[in-house]
Image (cartoon, rainbow, N blue to C red; front, side):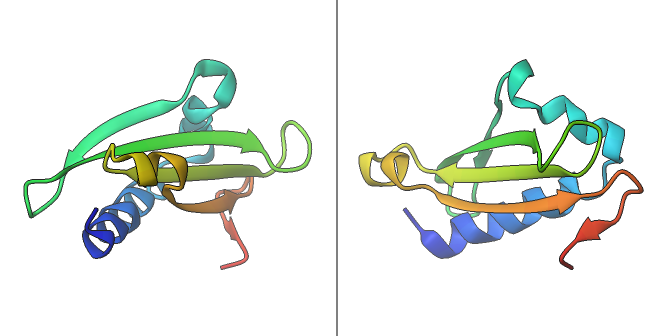
Length: 96
């Protein structure tokens, strides 16, 4: 996997998700299934992106959004590149 390309895609996906409202982000909750996307990088390589959301502490409060990316290779399926962020009900991002 081209780690630099995968990290760039991961950053772009996070940037796009962060444009969504708190209520829109709820669509990524695990109980509704993992949201998956296949994104083609500049190199032509295809990457699998998974997005999930969870209550960070208790329901109705902060939401943690977890994003992972892999290229379908056995090494990256076992240990994908990941990132996450937390959004508060008022739309602000915790820790940023």
